[in-house]
Image 1: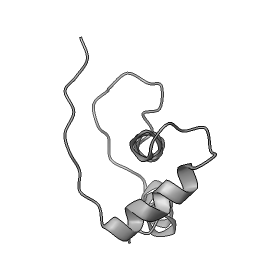
Image 2: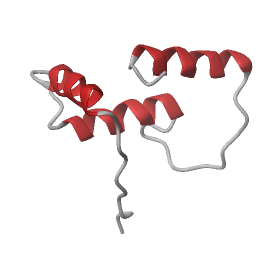
Image 3: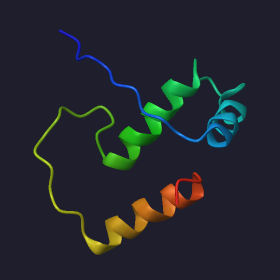
Image 4: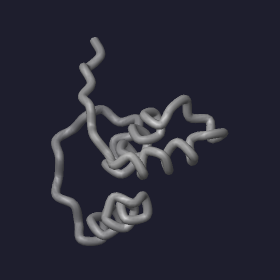
Length: 73
């Protein structure tokens, strides 16, 4: 059984930037791209859900850097 989905709001200018990245990238939609990026950042791409663990300082720094590069911070 598939899990239900929720809506996440992001600033419209960021969404426009994501749309530009998605064009010609192989992703079907901005949503598919955003889900891929979030799974990658959270370390869950292709993995079953598991109990969350504490991030190391290095991992936290990597996440912050990636979020900043994506325009979230």
